Length: 235
Image (cartoon, rainbow, N blue to C red; front, side):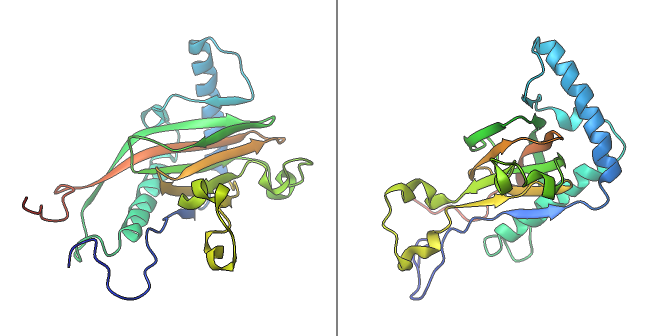
């Protein structure tokens, strides 16, 4: 039997892995991040010759550019949760003894938004996994009271792989498994969402008393002994 053969029976193919986890005790740490991010934004706006607006995306060198108390703990948290997510996503595909993983950050940056700013649908290239950590946003009850955006105010929306084909899809109870075509992750300070870089997503419009501030990253994960898992078949 080849790798593409399937045995008789039901097969739920090509799932979409995604992790949502939270870092405990982030009040003081996130407050420190807000202050440091504000200083970095002012510095980069000055260098770029840009005025402050409703949306800002920083340079992608935040990993080495951020120097605040608790930063090393935060990075360790991200790496550990990324390890967990990748391991669970690849259950059954890796050797039984597991792999010694090495995480490489291809970029890390912050974004600030308010007054209806949003980030349109996109994917991330040149990496395998991406993540979003929420630093600051309005409290839940205040955020969802927005008269226009409501509960969708500032959420991250993920679009499943079938989404592109659903525009002309015939819908009955037999393909109800395709619904809903997207899932929302509400912004909660201290929350980290890790997802495959190919997964289409967007940050919906946000408006609030506090800015919506997030830290995003792109990462690649390799095995220390190399990424080859299977013998190459002869021609």
